[in-house]
Image: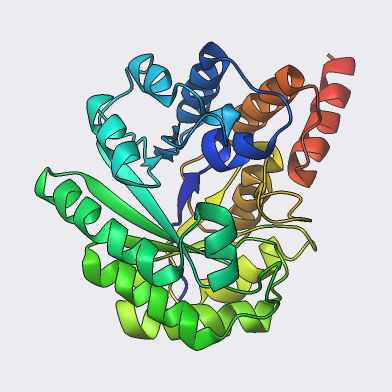
Amino acid sequence: MSRARSIHVVEVGPRDGLQNEARVLPVAARIGLIKALAGAGLRTIEAGSFVSPRHVPQMADTAGVLAGLSLPPKIRLPVLVPNGRGFGDALTAGARSIAVFAAASESFSRHNIGRGIDQSLADYRPIVAEARAKGLRVRGYVSCVLGCPYEGKVPLTRVVDVATRLADMGCEEVSLGDTIGVGTPDDARAMVSAVAGEIGIASVALHFHDTYGQALANVLACLDLGVTTVDSAVAGLGGCPYAPGASGNLATEDLVYMLAGLGVETGVDLRRLTAAGTAVCAVLGTKPRSRAAQALAAQMTVENTHV
């Protein structure tokens, strides 16, 4: 298998990023962030999730976010749905793309959504079937593919099993998530290769968190397998509220910079992306965790000084 000439970057900052930030952004700010990301060239942007606002207040009123967006049809705005009620709310809000999420760890599944692996997958099956019948795109997430905060190392056979079951029920794409960011390149490559052997590399997406600074290395290790889709979050926002120590996602700026250096196209304007990350961090009262964004900001300051 050879490295793809272009990578589709799935921007998860407005959902997976914001859900683990201390400050809750108002709907208008979330809309502004998504518009800025679309303006930077991103074509798939997670718009939020239809989970209980009691559990994840950062995602409250995702319906209002969708209602406030009038972007071209080529820009996908998937939303996460945890159950039938969330799916119904997503349909009412006009969502055209949804995602369901399972875990490769039984303990994490029960801590995260209050259901075991088998029950969660059984619950998703009719949701996925109805979504596909209505013409919606469906993505599946698998959490804890390289480690669990409760169980430690997760058996590769279980990761393959959960990913295969999601694909079999109708998920067009399965995103493999190193939820607590403990994976290293050889393990990441072996895991992705094993899953791709069952569902095909075209259906595989990478979702690496950067807790131990391994996210970019893990992506690089998997590129030659033919991966074409990688998840990341602007400014390195977020993590997982149910995974202690999961400090943040792979930063989109760092991913785009590395891929550009490899001659891999993303269609993303790094400067506009950096501006979007800087702006949302200012509202959140934090700073971008992206190394590329920090370097570019310093460079722009020098350039402006010499104008």
